[in-house]
Image (cartoon, rainbow, N blue to C red):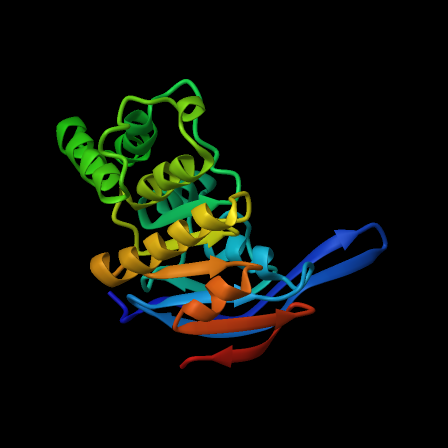
Length: 229
């Protein structure tokens, strides 16, 4: 496997807007070392979320190269891309997207089973992850019975269930009050330090961004700063 978790080269994304074209990414290039933790910052419309979606194989580039763990996620069929995404990339979104009819444990287990995990081993790993994020006594609780901060902890455990090459987080504390946000920020730092998980975080929270070892700043679809390397 490549020593880089992410390799981006001359990435471009153009969206057709009638007769016009919107250039959301304009030749972005950078690498992320395995085990690295960094923030992507910039004003709304700078291209942060578009970049995250392409790195996560939720969207495809117009031009350029993307490699995650040394692999190109865009070489196969839609089904193969979906499998790659499920197996190798974890996601944490601002809206946690938990399934309300399933317990915390079931929400974490499900991506593992979809990836072909053995049920008993997947259940044990999910339980350990929920204990790791401080929810060992909440395994059977449904999302509606959990606070916003607890729901986001479930989402983080779910992102880790398949031991992904990369975890992508898009405004993971954006819906939380300052205390819960600080707890989530600390949890990300602990996961990166203890599990050596590679983390790429889009955030408007400057305190969170500056707490991370590296920050990439974007404007108008381009990288204008890369600090901490």
